[in-house]
Image (cartoon, rainbow, N blue to C red; front, side):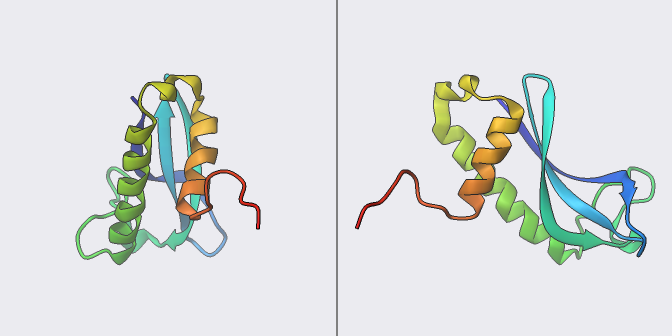
Length: 107
């Protein structure tokens, strides 16, 4: 079963001293990342572990909603989850988060 986590990659610091917050999906010992639209400064990052602070952090709260949606969608896949790679799961979850409909609709 894949794991889902909110992370900040220390080496991806931008010129304005902010970091992009990403959602990491790990499956079969391989990781893939979903970039979010959120950027945080050092004040929202734990300096020891370099993880996003959970307390009084609205960005963390918003991203946890996305993480819960991803976990729910991964659970719905059931045994077919073994057919996907980590990158494949990330692409599928990006579509699910964007609320794209499944399949093709004809009008």
